[in-house]
Amino acid sequence: MQRRDFLLRSARLAGGVAGALLLPAWARADTIPVFPEYYTYAGFYPQIDPQHYQLQCGGLIAKPRNFALAELYQRSVLPEVRSFHCVTGWTVANVHWRGIRLADFLAELRPLDSARFVVFHSADGVYVDSLSLDQARAPGVILATHIAGQPLLRKGGFPLRLLVPQMYGYKSVKWVDRIDLLADRPEGTWERDGYPSNAYIKKGFSWSDLL
Image (cartoon, rainbow, N blue to C red; front, side, top):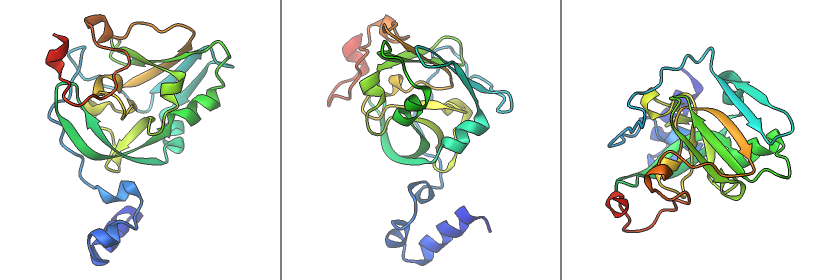
């Protein structure tokens, strides 16, 4: 029996919730949550070959670097239980993610003093968004590789997506294949349509407020 399955069975035998609380976060949710929608601005879900995937990192950092998926998976050890909020009005509560703390990843890239923004590009060739360095280093912001203990779904951003739990979902770029650190903030894909770049979750806010 695999270790993950053993832990899950042990939790059930140990008394349901009480036993489950002893497990790491990824082991407490073995079913991928259902999202009401899997949006794609480009109109398709990129088909990415994990064997050839590379995360390109450049801009104002000490030295441009590329990371293979195996390298990212080695770094992906941080469990995060965070709700996901869509600007259209729906929420998926207590999603079990696993990923790389973005603050740690940026420290490894060694940003230059002139760097002020982190820009995320999607493998769809269309979608782009950004965070300030302070926003990127906030608690809970991760480069996510897994959901409910399993690799991300293709339509959910496989193999790598940004997760910014403090903000609406359009800031959590899917299919990330390039990260640049820049001095100036480029206009994001949805920001060109009037959406705020600092998309902090607000009670009662909805998509229609921006139409």
